[in-house]
Length: 175
Image 1 (tube, helix red, strand yellow):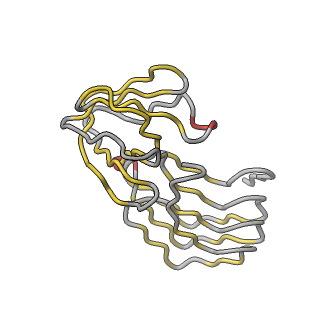
Image 2 (tube, helix red, strand yellow; image 1 turned 90 degrees about the vertical axis):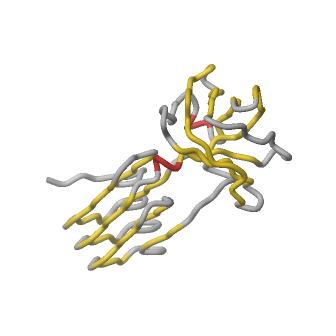
């Protein structure tokens, strides 16, 4: 069958776990990326106790979605320097309201020294394997891959308007 995407990515994977594999696919004539893989950063707003943080959403399209589970590994990052400030495991996570997450971790976390600290759930950074796949005749990129997991793209054909593959990590717009 055929699918036509006139305004969005052909495939979009957000906060996934494990491994994403695209094999023997054909993505052509989309008005956006053939594939987009990423997680979300959350704004570290306040330290409520030695190991409990109040987080906010950096982008309005992410509001109200709880992406943390007990046992997940979380990094606290200074978004201006990309420095990892702390790493911990989730003990408890809950939505306070549509705009806030309360995150309790297994160790003390420093209070933010500026308003540029964010958190990243690195458990939701999947591996990606794209092979024997065609991407082209679309507006922006082939694949936008923003994951800490291992990425392997092989034996593919690209004829995209911009990059065939873009690897990026961005901490200040889409979060």
